[in-house]
Length: 115
Length: 109
Image (cartoon, rainbow over all chains, first blue to last red; front, side, top):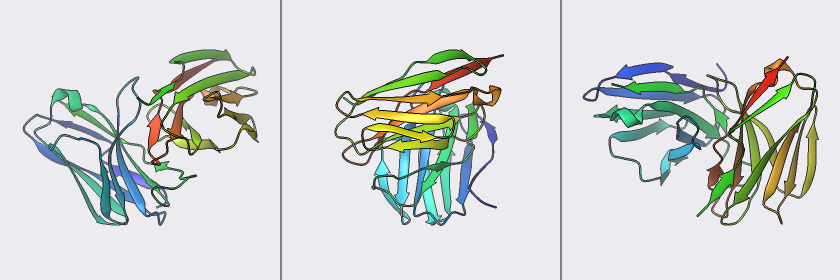
């Protein structure tokens, strides 16, 4: 496989559930990102990993917990979410973090609905 | 604060030309990106401008004026498949990407 792959594509969960989103990239990129996309709002950066180290955490609630076990995989662990967390969660990767023409390659996203 | 403005929605006719504007106010500037996102799909990279002027890539062109904090994406010979959202994003002085809310482009026959 090539590009950035996200699973599951759709997820419905209750407020007390625990679930995980998975992202995988086979591009040899060194940086991986989690974004939240809500309707008619700008993309919100949640977490950035560069060379498997977390470099950005933009005041995200602790009910979202990222994990980057290696440079090709990124997880977002979810627990005790709120209905307002319902959104499209996009994973992206780039060759490096913190440089100029740093083009992001996105996955198709995981559509999360919290009941 | 940092801000990117772009129209929420635009409508154009197949075969025509459309210009999607983006204005920005950011802490520093290290380049401006345009991405295309079809409904239910991943955003895909269209262009990157860091110097003033027009960059042409087939039917799509992107323009930048750093002094005016302004960019536009020009789409020529519109096709139905160009119906999508177009996202403008600026890389600030800390290499943080600041995103606009996107412009939904509707193409009519």
